Length: 197
Image 1 (tube, rainbow, N blue to C red):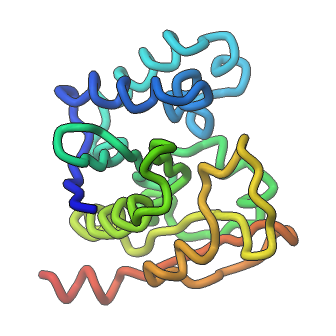
Image 2: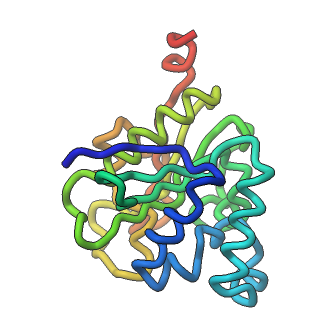
């Protein structure tokens, strides 16, 4: 499948909305779940979370994520950015035993979404590889994810965090296993970033 990956900017909001609109969860969430307080998330609904996304996009130093296109159609999304952006993710049991490293220097991939009709065609891998490149471009020292482990069975409500084999295929290594079903994975970028300079 031929894909084009684009950084999400203000002029791509309609494409983000088009993609998110193909699924009730993403249409309601607008990738705010790990960013804003849970009370605000639920009270805002789809319209409010979209407004929060747009406001954050307008003031953020870094892109909020990446869109994958097949031709002119948006078919996949990857949220990524400095770990410090994802305040609620850092407070979850998965991340609570974190490290002392700067949350601004380490990037995180908390969400991947691919349109149902194109799943299984490498869209997630292309997006994750592009997220690694984006983190490098912005001087990140590492990039992380907190996917389900290989043994975790899929459930439709929370697969957006991804699965261990996907992250392994993109050079991520297990850093710790906070629970039987979850792993925190990291790809160190210090040497990769320095070699580009």
